[in-house]
Length: 120
Image (tube, rainbow, N blue to C red; front, side):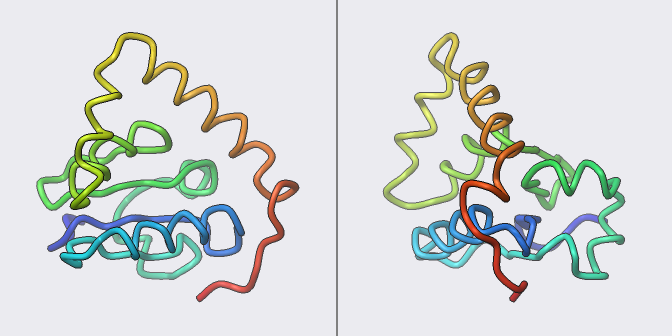
């Protein structure tokens, strides 16, 4: 499925994930992004495997491109007024690899680091 708007798919039962979505919502002053928890039945239409969805946040663009985990950071930042400049940091050699390692470390421990809540 190709969404009409850039869509963030996240773990609605993960406290860190929900906080990250809260930040994105506050920063998205133009309201370009849509958000959907991977636990929502509508996510099946995106065709992304459940284990992949459970492992990382996904950004699905209207043109069909899909970014997961830390690789979604730069495209997301480019869509947010006032945060676009931060996306440029991901062009610095070594930053994408470091971001992927940090994301993987946090994702593996996300249920221990911040208490989850019931999905929205």
